[in-house]
Length: 121
Image (tube, rainbow, N blue to C red; front, side, top):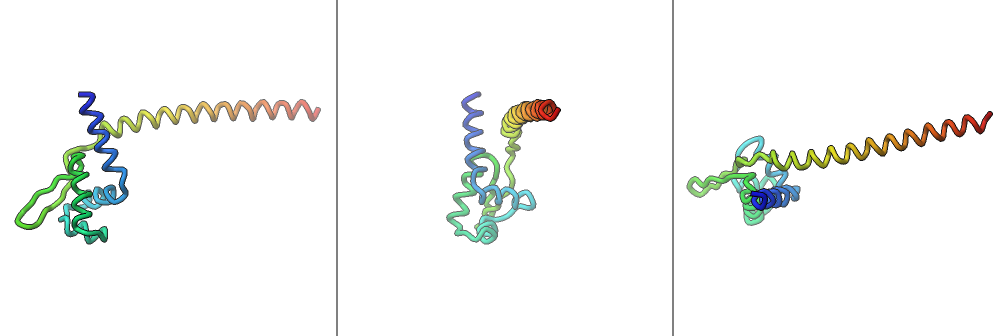
């Protein structure tokens, strides 16, 4: 189970690491599209678009259906809840660290202000 989760994470993050693939997901969020339509929209070859779609398919983020000669792409069933939860844990961790740093900075400012007040007297 853990190995499967790590593999899913790796596939998801690898798929999302590319700006074109993120753009494809945005486009498919608006409407389904053929590989030809996607290739034209992103100004790339059919071969290049097929490679991007394959990576997204392997991650479960895109599904394709071939009807006749046209392969239509749509959002896949994978929702990225686990990845979002993983990211959220780290966001909270960093937020706590920055809050602690802010507290230290504020304490230093107060200490400096008190020192300045005593120096002026």
